[in-house]
Image (cartoon, rainbow, N blue to C red; front, side):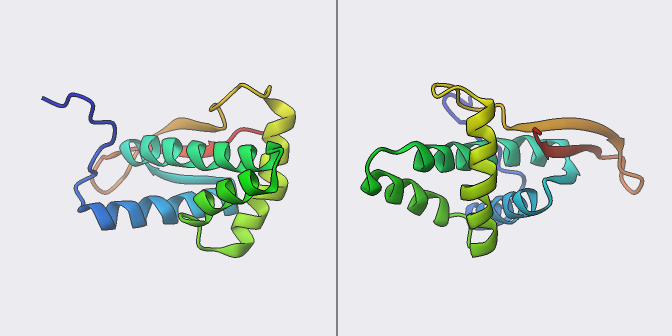
Length: 130
């Protein structure tokens, strides 16, 4: 039974899976939308929403120590400095203006996009909400 198991393994070992999710989230923040399979799309959407929530907490923090701790949580996963800066300046500001202070989530949209030609895998577009 899969009691309290939150994530899918995606047919990969742990290190490979986390590296893939980090790379896909970085691409999502850079291009604001990516195309992948439906199961990967769901996982990267959860991962990216958590990172955006941490960026919002860093922006809304009252103490600089709290902001620094939240930024370090994001830097643990996003290695590209340019993308991380964009996440903290542009995306966190956009989602702060759009959501109330207590609202978490709802930053990423998964849209089903037909099937892949080669193997018939269901495809989806993962996009940041405007």
